Image (cartoon, rainbow, N blue to C red; front, side, top):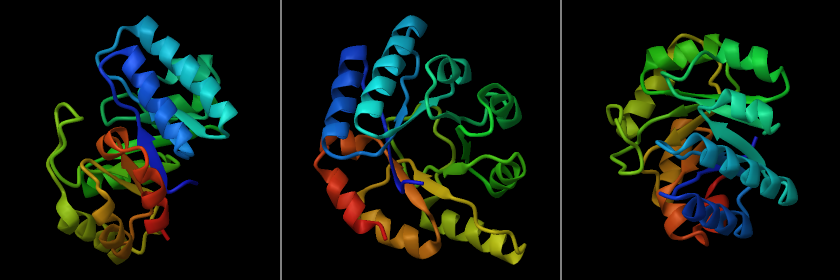
Amino acid sequence: MEKLQYISQGQTKEEQEFNIRKALDNGIKWLQVRWKNADEDKFFQLCEISNKLCSEYHTVCIINDHVQIAKDIDADGVHLGLQDGSVEMARSLLGKNKIIGGTANTLSDVLQRINEPCDYIGLGPLRFTSTKEKLSPILGFEGYQNIIKSLKDRLITIPKIYAIGGVGLQDIEPLQQIGIYGVAVSGQITNCPAAISEFKKAMI
């Protein structure tokens, strides 16, 4: 599983597509299509375009929240927020070979996600980010450390956890030292797609 995930950004379908194409041109290999508050038809069109582009670029394409759209366009999987329906329901609709990721903010969320089970966990936010509405309580490095320690204390195998929420290049090393598997990045890659190669180099 790729360690770097780009979460798409943009206020319009054109902006979204432009940013996705730039990320693909700069070597992103895992895309999550996210466009909150979008018109459903336009979001479907964006997902269709993105999925086709990802096939051409041999890039994993997952859809944020919309399980039915992920199924309809045969995307690689879906990412579910804490309020976005169950992993079990998504699994029954998409089948066992699709990727299902789940958001978490607390230790109990992480334990829930391990039980469900999903393929990876997006844990955050690391710090404040303007790209997410209704931001959950900020974890900081200490929050990640405490959660990983609690899992180890319970003798639970550490799942594939991706740090999310205001993650920058300088955060990769300390996050990996804590035991975080990968990162999901939106703003920094949207603003500077060339940073993708730097992120990849920084990740062991």
